[in-house]
Length: 285
Image 1 (cartoon, rainbow, N blue to C red):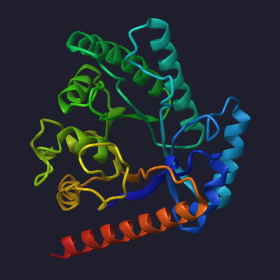
Image 2 (image 1 turned 120 degrees about the horizontal axis):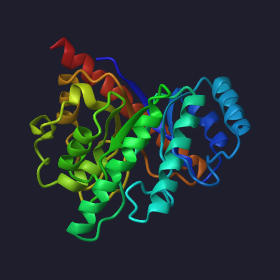
Image 3 (image 1 turned 90 degrees about the vertical axis):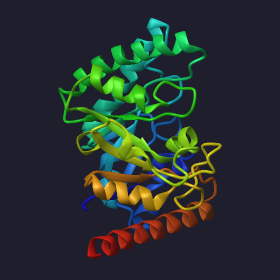
Image 4 (image 1 turned 120 degrees about the vertical axis):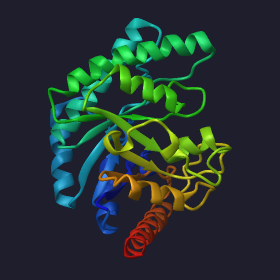
């Protein structure tokens, strides 16, 4: 096994990103995924990106990935102006990722669907948008990772993710598996079995990225792994079986106080150590 561990900046994204860096440095967390948000990280000038790059180097931190902006961005939007505007925001994120030497941008296929016809229309629009986004990304070294979404949104079912992959065939387009979203959508299936190996998806080639967090199967709580009901032993067996070579990004819920942040990072590192030990024992056996 050869994969990395990192954390999403959503853990402290009510504050400017720069305030999080010393904490990551102190806890020896060297990889992060940036979660854009007004007041946290939403650069309007190249100089801001260059300044962040310097701070990252000073703290010994790599940006592995950037999540697309969430607020007001929907690449499946039925209004053409809003859809194109959303595509441009994702393309802007790709350029920022390229400047920061990241590897990929995480993209949501779409937002809430209200009925079957609306879902069908939005899925088609998402595919149209992704064709343009992937074409844009191919002029850079940045890959696009489609994230499985929460219930009621485009991309909440693996069948839709697979359809998108088939209609936008590109080595630059892959999947970001979000464990928390998966649990909320399929908790009746995966209580005892992860089930991913039974899906007609080429995980070895197309699993680019993983978000790990937990919940009770009823809401997107962003608990740390082991604090909910997600089947982590099955998950770890699965990533070993497919020889996953990417990054595990912990996505904890937002921590509003400094002492809460320190406690969260401490627990995250303990979880990572336990995962490392699991794979060592598993490989030895």
